[in-house]
Image (cartoon, rainbow, N blue to C red; front, side):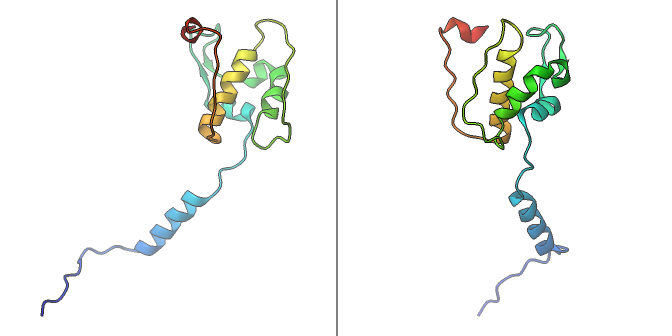
Length: 120
């Protein structure tokens, strides 16, 4: 009768490492707002911005409340914006979309008026 072969490779604290990895993987992500996510992760390109570099909500403080109401932790269910032209509505949308992709994955449908608009 043959004896099953056992591995001779030592795994120091193998179970502990496994359980620690599981704990890290299952730990809920800290709640964050769209504005704080954008400050930490968003970078503006020179092609689409007059001021390329890291996104700074402090540069447009009037957008902070709008972005924060779009966060997962916000109880607000509908956001309506009435702003002037070219003061950040598109950037709010881009920050929110990137936040959803990174922080709270879910189904998203982006609708553009024409096929040409997707290239702008």
